[in-house]
Length: 167
Image (cartoon, rainbow, N blue to C red; front, side, top):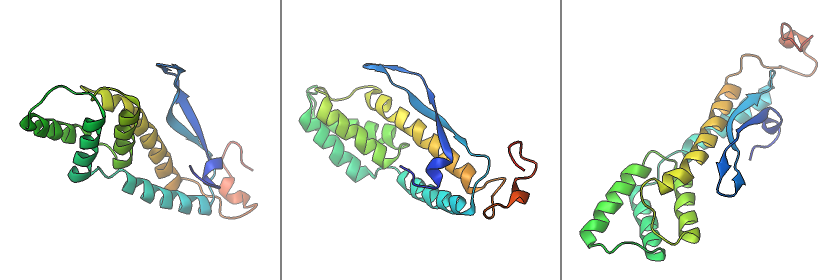
């Protein structure tokens, strides 16, 4: 996910959840190291920019294609073409707030693993945990990208003075 130096600065906090197959912990937030190097700040800014791009919604055409593929691979109720158009509009509205990559993952997961076309909040139940984890990581990256305290060089204790663990 994140390379050095960022991976060593973040510690995931999980919330316990019971899923269909037992424990299904989810990252809810991250603890961040108290002192961050300038390199880590720069990397956090780059990663944050990438994650912001990833959070763009899926465009309507691609969503329609994916939903049509899902429709063809799952059992669904009998419907007229006008009903299908309404179904597409409803799903497009429901899925619009979510990042494209997570929506694609959910639609393709459902297509591979479920027999029936999703109803109600079936897809949102798949999407929401991923979005929560994404938001938690982005919040941590935002904090890293604008740190209160940056270590400006090896052994520079002046930047660490006043910190409970510092010199």
